[in-house]
Amino acid sequence: MATDQGPISNASVVGQLVQRCAPAWQSYTEHAFVQQIANGSLPQACFRHFLIQDYQFLVQFTRAYALAVYKSTSLDDMREAASAVHALLNTEMGLHVEYCQRWGISESDMLAAQEATATTSYTRYVLDVGMSGDLLDLLVALAPCSCGYGAIGAALMADPATRLADNPYRDWIELYGGEEFQRVSRGAVEQIERVTRARIGDQPADSPRWEQLVCIFERAVRLEASFWQMGLDLAE
Image (tube, rainbow, N blue to C red):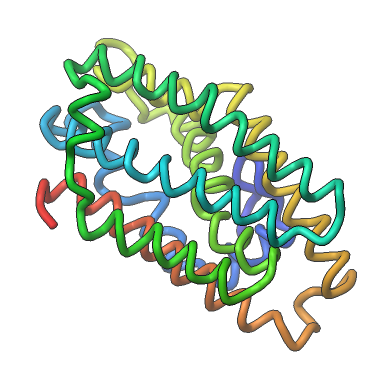
């Protein structure tokens, strides 16, 4: 039987999506890139490449939350999406730049870098879903990142096989497994819960839209796994 994954409870909408897409979810959350971060064996060149692309991803992720403001139909949803945009632009990106500087990567390096194909494929898929669908479609496409990183961080922190001592990626593990990011991920799970209930009712799996949401989620999960693979491959 599946168990709750950090900020994602089985009973939540996101939890139900995870269970419907279990093989893809496992491939994403237990990807070799994640496992090598956990044991400290990931080649540092691969991690630097990932960090640069993650900056490029954050730019597009922010655009997606800006789109969420437009797609919102209530002031509360607008405020929540606008708050995410503000946090991403004025806090998260700065923290990412600061972290990358410790790895010898400057913001100018990241701005000059070309997007990898995996980065473009994933982020433009999310934006396309948001443009063609509604707020719920967009939030579900964002969920593998907004909720998934929290699940990965919690799993790594709880796994006795995770090596923290002398692990060059300890800060990364503790960031996503730490309470602050867990709170952010829980907020994303709860936001999807509220928007889902408001738009398609209290039994989302019985809605005619459910299969569409499952397809969106699974595609986004697979694109997240491709993003990890891009880091491993150091290639497009």
